[in-house]
Image (cartoon, rainbow, N blue to C red; front, side):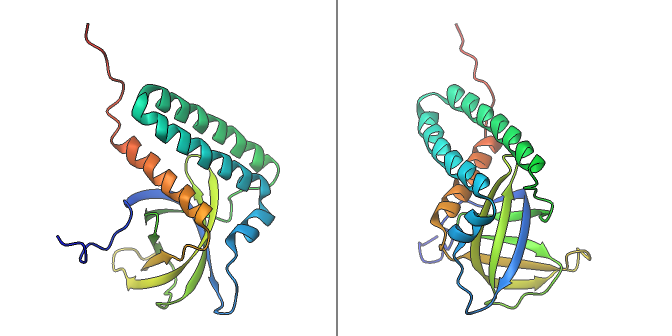
Length: 193
């Protein structure tokens, strides 16, 4: 396959996430970093710390996978405790719909209850599982197909991210890499004496 026919820039996974979206008017400025940080500053702080932590663990993964896995599990545990604390403070993800999405660092596809015209700009809020990290990104609908199999969500929407929030996009990529590694994790390796 030649490079021109290969369109994907990032690895894609199917993942269960919390998702909410809203259409943006063509004149509305999509400043995700400011809007996202105003309504949930603690979650934004957790996301930034988690992003830096994930970069360090990914570097460590090549040297010592066992320690990297242990640190990843510990980070997950801390994230779950933090998410519970945020829920108790009223910063819940109740407005998100749990959906299986096809996701990459450059876009996502999901089933939807409404038909969205190609070119529609969207603000997307994602709650990544199980860490409960929240990211806000914007993108544009590139395809909308009617599904015959899902009467509850009759449309399949494909969105390409516009890159206006690189920190959130990096967090999304880190999440995908972690999920991808978890899918191919052979488990503990025992040393033979």
